[in-house]
Amino acid sequence: MEKVTLYPKLITDALATVMYAGTKKNLIESEMLVDDVRINGMSVTFTLLFPKETDPFLKSTLKAAEAAIHYYVSKDVDVTIKTEFKTKPRPKDEPLLPQVKNIIAVSSGKGGVGKSTVSANLAVSLARLGYSVGLLDTDIFGPSMPKMFGCEDARPYAIDVDGRQLIEPVEAYGVKLLSIGFFVSPETATLWRGGMACSALKQLIADANWGELDFLILDTPPGTSDIHLSLLQLLKITGAVIVSTPQAVALADARKGIDMYQNDKVRVPILGLIENMAYFTPAELPENKYYIFGKDGCKNLAEQLSLPLLAQLPIVQSVCENGDNGRPAAMDVASPVGQAFLALAQAVASKARLIKE
Image (cartoon, rainbow, N blue to C red; front, side, top):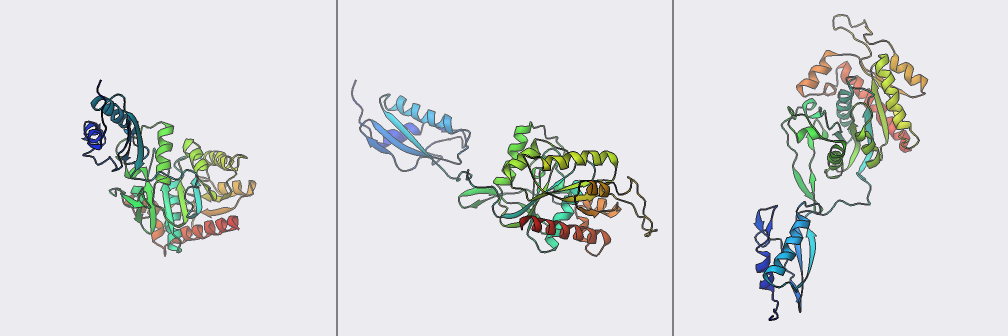
C-alpha cells in the first residue's frame, strides 16, 4: 500500500466532513480548528476550540474528528487532538462569592409564615441603609421574588467577565436579584429531582455576576431539604434568621430549623428570631392589638433558647398588597411597617457585624 504524505489540507478536508451538533455546521465552518495543525511524519496534532469545558458534544466530536482522519486520510495516522475553550471554567479551588462580606440565610420551619416577604423587605431595607445588597431566591420549586419585586417579565442575560460568561442579576429597588423564576414559566410546575435543583442553584450562585456586596440575602425554601444542605456546603453563611408566627405548630417546626443550623456538623450562628404576624391592629382602632395566632410565642421561644428576638411584625394589609403589586412595603419608609423593617435591617446588620468581629 502506498504511503501517504501528510499535509495540512488533507487534515482540514477530513475535518470538514465532521458536523458539530452545537452549530449544525462542520468543524471548519464552525471555526473550531485553531490554526496550529502540526505534522511530524505520520503524526498530526491540532487543537479544537469548544464553547465551554462542559460542552455536551465534546467527547463525541473528538471521536468523530479522529475517525474522519483515519477514514479519509489513513488509518495509520497517529492523531492527537487538544482542546481549548471560549469560556474559562469555573475556578475549582476558590471559595464561592469571595467578594460578598455577609451571607444571611432567611429560613422558616414551615411555609406560609411570611419568610419570603421578610426576605424581600429585609433586602430592600438594607439597601436603603446604604449597603450593597443581593437577594437570591433559593426556593427552586416555589420562587416568588420576581412577583414581589415586580419584575416577572425580566430575563437575565449573560455578560463576559474575565473570560467567563456570567449571569447578570436583575436590579430592582436597589437590590441585585436572581431567581429560577426568571428562567421558567410561572404557570408551569418545576418537576426536577433534588440533584437537578441543586445544580441549578449552584449555577445561580457561582455563575452569576454578583460583584462586591455587603449582604447577600438567601430566601430559603420552607423546612429542611437538599437545597439547605447544598447552601451549607457551597457557601460560608454568616448567620441565619428564623421566621415564625406565634402559633404553636409553626414554632414546633421553627425549632427544627434552628436545630439544623446549630448542628455540630453545620454550626451556622443564629442571628435571631422574627415573629411575623405577631398581632393585628385595625386602622380605625390604632391602639388595639388582636393576637390572632397567639401572643409572644416566638418571643418565648427565643428566651427559652437564649436567642435574640429581632422583631415582632404585625399583620398589615398593605404588606400583602404591596407584595402582590411588586413593590415591597419597606419602600414606604415613613410608614410604621417601613420603620419596622428598617429597624429589623439595622438589627441584622449589627448582629452580623458582631459575628465578624
